[in-house]
Length: 440
Image 1 (cartoon, one colour):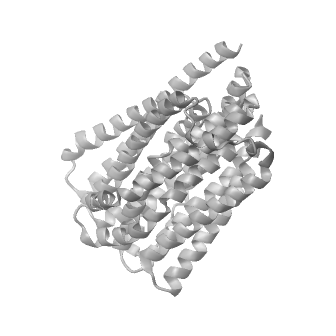
Image 2 (cartoon, rainbow, N blue to C red):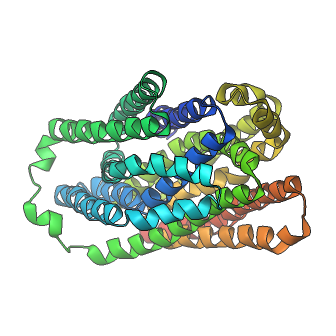
Image 3 (tube, rainbow, N blue to C red):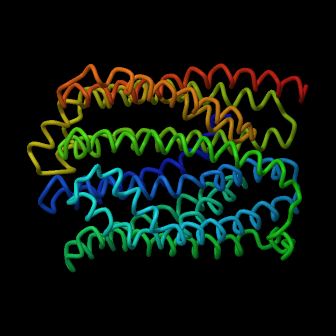
């Protein structure tokens, strides 16, 4: 089982590592453009794009869970149906986002909290980045489909090429052509469409014998749509709540000050790096749990979970120790602004606690996706979000200084992760018992 997990997890980890690497390069380029407001503008713009794109996260999760279960059943027609339906939803979602751009610019202004310098930079980034949303949604579907087919190697290869291309283009546009934040956005968009094209070509070459059974009616089929829509509704609620925390985190920092926005943007890279490491194993859990549910092997599902948490404990404790004792290296890489760097080091202790507070939530999320238990994903997120806003809004008025409010923001965020983990443990074990009874 460990071999199965690492065979799926390691390619995902390699591809995931290139994602924070890309963000690190973007922030590093922004950090050397001359002011903390540029880092803040990138943080706000990326927050808006993530809010929009992750609102459609059900496309990736549905593709993985339903495709993996179809793979376990050796159901070729359902495998084709999941891909076709996902791509149709991508087209609809992408057109919807492009139509809604004027309202989404207002979201950028709101998060910027009236700081016009930050808002102007964010709008410049978004004016280009929105055109990449259709490609980002297609990548959700295609990557999820490949992982559901137990093939993480293709996802890794394409993601690495995509992100290296993104880094190359962004660096060229910013450093050579002096496009500033617009160059960062354009590099990202071009790389996204290149990745979509690569995955489509590889899919036809690698799985031509399967995809020859795809039919045009599959793109508008209502077969199994009720279950798909129920999961989609749960995932939309979950993603909206997740995005609310992420956006409010940035919004609260802008109210504290420009320096606080820059500090959080840097420290959240520690969260991003760990989340992508743990997500590599969560993706393995998604693919394997879904496959074994399709094969009706409940005991194997439990074995997958047990092995994942052995790895998870080791990974989380090790990462926390690294963050506790060696935070300076990453922060020095990201910016040469002494004030931002020193302030970030002052708050780095809170970011170092992220792995032990959040790893269980990430791993259980992968399990819930694989067994398509979207209700559990929604409930765990609702619990964590209630605690986050309860702590920050309930106690915020008692903390006057900017430093105290920033500390409270991090305490609320860590509590949000910890509660998600605890509720996930409870619902996860209930789900395992139900699967054992079903497949015994």
